[in-house]
Structure formats: C-alpha cells, structure tokens
Image 1 (cartoon, rainbow, N blue to C red):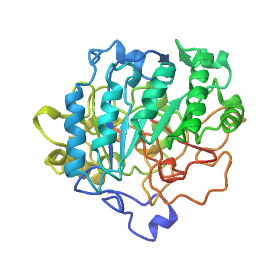
Image 2: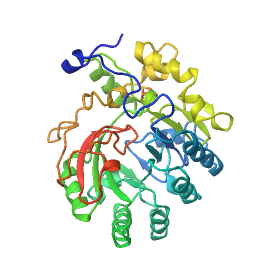
Image 3: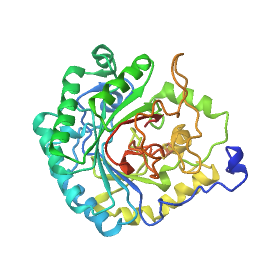
Length: 382
Ligand code: SF4
C-alpha cells in the first residue's frame, strides 16, 4: 500500500505510473556503459570494490551492440526516448572506440534524443577534445569533486586536478572558439572532504565559462556503499516507502552486453537479459518490468529483493514530488539538500523534465536550456 508522502499528495492520488514524458512504449532514458574499466579509484564510488568482485571482468562494450541500440532507438524510441547517456560503472574514455560509438549515436539516433557523455575528464586530451566536438553530442558531464588539488587527490584517487582542470579549460576554450553547441557540465559530489570548498568550486567554474555546475549528494549506489546505505535506511524509516522512478524511466546496456533496470547497480543484480537475444522494446513492455513495477506499487519486494534492500528509491524524483527526499547529513556549514546553491544566470525556469545525472532529477536542466550562463544546483546523485 503506497501512502501519500506530503500534504499536497494527500489531496490527489499520486500518479506513480507512466505520466507526461514517461511512456509504456519505450524508456525515456537509456544509459550505455561503454566499459567496466576505470582509471581512478574515487572514495565515494563503489568501483574499487567492484573491481575486486566476481562481477568484474574488465570488459568493454562491443560497438556492434551500441549500433543495435542506436538503431532500435531510431526505429522504436522516437518520441519517447529523451536521453541517451554514455557513462555507467567505468570511465568511457578508456574505451578505444568510444568516439566511433558517439559518432554513430549522434548521426543515427534521431531528433529529440539528447546524447550525453559522463567522464572524469582525466583522458580528455586535446585530441579527444577535437573528437568530442566533432561528434556533435549535446552534453559532456565532467566529474571533478574538488576545488583544491589536495582535496582532489584525496577524493579522486589516482588523478591530478591540475591535469584534469587544464583538460576542461581547454575544452571550454575550444568549444567556444568553434561555436560548438556542446553544453559543458562540471559536477561535484559533495561529501565530508570537500564540502567547505563547494562555493570556491562553483565560483571558479562559473568564471571559467562552464554551462552548468551540478552539486550532487552522496547516495548508496543501490546499497553498494554499505555505511551510506545504513544511514539512508535509518533516515528513510521516517517516511513511508514509495516506488522508485527507474522502473518507469530507465534501462541500462552494460559493458557485458546485458540489459538491466537499475542505473546504479554495482552488483549486476538488476540484469534482465542479454541484448543479443532481445530488444529494449520487448523487455520494457514484458513481464519482468511489469512485475517489477507491480512490486514497487504494492511495496512488496519478495520477488525483487535487490530493490527491496535498496534505500535509494528516495533519491529518484517523480515529477509530482520533486524534491521531497531527505538528504544524508553533512557536517555543519553545509547547505540543506535540494535547494539551489546559486542562481548565476537569469534564464527562465526550465520546463524540461530531466537533469543530467543518472537519477534524472527534475531541476534546472541543461538539456532543455539554451547555452550561455551557468547555473548551479544541488541534488542527490547516483
Ligand atoms: S529501488 Fe534501488 S535498486 Fe531498485 S531500481 Fe531503484 S535505485 Fe535501483
């Protein structure tokens, strides 16, 4: 039984169903994981543990499967799919044919699909910058997570902020010089080690000309970060559980070539099928997704224990609820969650539904905004 979670909801039934942009025909958001390999070992990311697990094989996605997906998007997903995001559990720029895959997506996915690349930026060399701009994708989302090199080194283990920052500044400079429409997002997972330099981060990238500055909250990655999951479950106990948005919104093609329902799964427990033998269209409308959605609506996860144990449903933002969730606590001097940190332009409120993170929060959305000016906002992350 799903209970209302706010006064306004109690006045009208909560539409936990396909509504507005989400559709029973095809997902609105498809995530492609180009590789399991990552060149950093960030402390808030499950990858270091994932890399030692039996689920990790160091695989890279077969470009033929990417082509199959893009073709399916063009033939079946037109008018439904809004975002095709390349990211996931590894660093996309380590894939030797990443730009071939982005080129194909950009040329063949069809109109109305926003193509995003999520990267840590370490390998965003001048050569890669040229390839990125030539690909004509719409958004690049670069995870930085620090203002000072010392903090960066502690959070993004194996990286050097001086190198990555120079890569991003070079990208901004060349994108502007070329008149490119690529929107450049710099992002930041706020946590204990960096929360006192968030404002400096925002100010620096505003002045540097980033289109959007995204400050995200820590999440448990579907329970993979166990201490965060424990804290989140404790906080969640203060409110009734509601359905997670993902079963109505997203599907993932992972580097193995499998389709999965959860964009924040580091245990490969949301895998549904091998994409070589099925289609997104059939899976999205098939019995497993129907059963999963029913479990979320009934709050009965006996047949879907991965979702049952997961506390991150609270961080997915249904359009009629956003934002309602409670943030994990940070030390003093931090801001309350889900409040704009700073409005640095005077663009009108965006009508668009999706923000550039995998969670798809409905806040200040670069995918629907004209370029020019930067905007900073906080929300949860995955
Ligand atoms: S409830 Fe958790 S595991 Fe299930 S789809 Fe949502 S985020 Fe993923």
